[in-house]
Image (cartoon, rainbow, N blue to C red):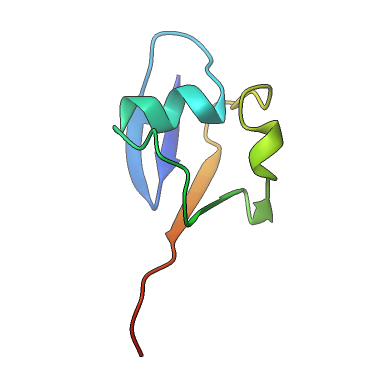
Length: 67
């Protein structure tokens, strides 16, 4: 299955969840991280249960300090 993270293709053998996709990217610390799937923000509480579908587009946004 192919899905996209910030427009970069990612391939996995089977479907996975948002949490599994983030773990594959070594993004296990969710502090300051927001995730949208196909332009819809998914609450952090749903990441473990939200299955990704083929060709889903994940947008990852990390908050940073500064001005």
